[in-house]
Image (cartoon, rainbow, N blue to C red; front, side, top):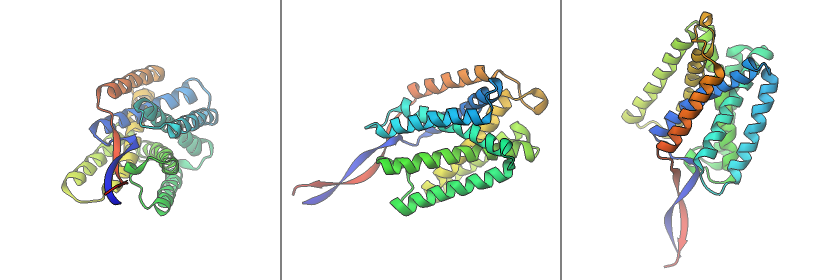
Length: 258
């Protein structure tokens, strides 16, 4: 028997420019839709968190049970995680009273602990290897914590530093531009760059979402949250249908006869 290398399909999409476009739109939708439920509909942060966490758990189970990559299911799960992240961060920051800085530090510790445990258990935290239930569990826990961290970080930057929503968005956009430069100009770990970019796209979406729907006196445009959410949701669906959606690949071992 000899070994041959086989390309095995992952359960998550290939990381392309289209991936990042949809990811930023999804994070913005998470902010506006989360605010729609907790503020516009006046459910409050606790009830909103319970709603979106329940939806997230259902979608993660469905995603894990799926036999292959399904773009609409994957992105629905991402949107659920970013919306749950919005309400969880707001609940921790405002209802529990630990503040934006405290919430950001706590959630950063959760992200690092999840990634560290994932690496210790599986030997890699590359998203290209997400094709077993155990790895998927680590992936979605890390995703949810990173989305929640991004919300808290975006609120801290926009509110506590005085930069405002537009200033905060520019800061995170500049951070992502730096990561792009590092990707093309250096040999820094692609896994490190991916997770850093994944975290930074969340506060970018959060600050853009807040800029769209917060009152003018607070530096926003005071647009309708439900309307903004509907428009962004339609853009996401259009991007999923128009942009190539391929499952990521990773090398596996295939036994073949001599």
